[in-house]
Structures are given as C-alpha cells and as structure tokens.
Image 1: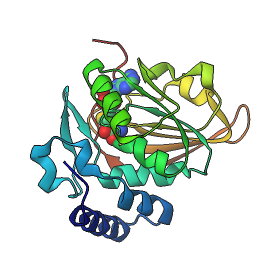
Image 2: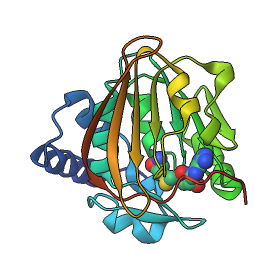
Image 3: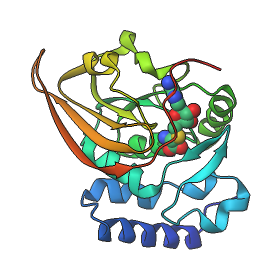
Image 4: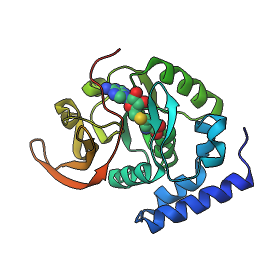
Length: 213
Ligand code: SAH
C-alpha cells in the first residue's frame, strides 16, 4: 500500500471531524493529518481507515479510535523533546502521533506477535521511538524514569503505583481506568508527594493485562 493524495484528503476530513468533536489542539490535529493510518491496518480495512473507529490488529487487540488517540494526546500536552512513556504499543499508531509531536517515545507491548510486526513496521517507515520494548508495562520503565508524560492505551482496572512514581514533577499520566468501560483520568504530579486527579468521559479499551500469556 502507498500513501496518496486521496489518503491525505481523507485524513484532512478526519481531522476536521475530530475538531468538530471537540479536539482543539492544533498540533494534535496536524499529527492526525500527517500519520498514514491506513498503513497501520490490514489492507482489507484500507477503505475504512479514516473513519473514526477502532479496528482489529490481531492478537485480539485493536488500534484505538482516532478520537481517543487525539483526546489522550491532547491531555498529555506534549512539548518537543518531552520524554514520554507509552504502555500498549499495539499497531504503533499512537506512538507515531507522539513522534510527530516531537516527543522522545519509550513504548512497551506485551503481545509478542504484535511487538514483532510493529517493530518491523517502524523500521520500514523510518519511525524511531527511543525504545520499543517487549514486556509488561504495568511496572513502567524505572530505568528511564522520570517521564514528562505517561500514556496508557489499554483499560486499567486500577492505577499502577509504579507509573505515578515514574512521573517527573509537572508530569502527566493519562490513563483509562475501569473494567467494563473506562473513565479517562489525568494525574498531574504537583510535587514529590502531591498528585492532582481530573476525570473525563467514558471510553472503551481492551484490557491492560498484568501477566504475560
Ligand atoms: N496504542 C495502540 C492501542 C493498542 S490496544 C494503537 O494505537 O494501536 C492496547 C495494547 O495494549 C494492546 O496491544 C495490548 O496487547 C497492550 N497491553 C495490554 N496490557 C499491557 C501491558 N501490561 N503492558 C504492555 N502492553 C499491554
């Protein structure tokens, strides 16, 4: 598959739709206009790649809905050169949006098949996260902490303490919390000991799983 003007046109429409749904951050919308989402999906989904929908990516996982990716990216408030940890690489679409926002991205995936396919895909596309790791993101990545932002792209039954502790002061954790469906939750680290919590609407994610298969 290639990226064509037709795809760019569809991305523009998608970004306009997300703006109409309330996404205001121009940098995030610009990233949505740039990242070729159809290339992250099986070719059978090509015609639908720019609909605001989640799609299966194998191993019972999904590429998040564009609105969700934009919403989480907006909450993170990424600045160029920020060190960002992503839990749940999946297709790598959210990772690529973070890279377009000029973040230094560390991303973790626990499904080996997805990890391998996405790793090859990053190579082919020339997308360069600082680290793409196969493992359990529940524990975060203590050796690279602290992070300016941490984004969890799977539904967490509760907030992993390790992730809060790996935020820099001023850093932001964006995490969907819940079992059946999830409440988008933002934690901002105000000081060593204080966190400010804000909740947003309901979303639906595949579960964040603690142990490897
Ligand atoms: N950001 C992805 C969303 C993929 S769905 C995208 O844009 O495509 C969520 C992903 O989280 C799945 O790939 C799932 O395998 C992964 N995941 C679930 N629990 C995890 C854990 N404990 N550590 C790392 N990844 C996890």
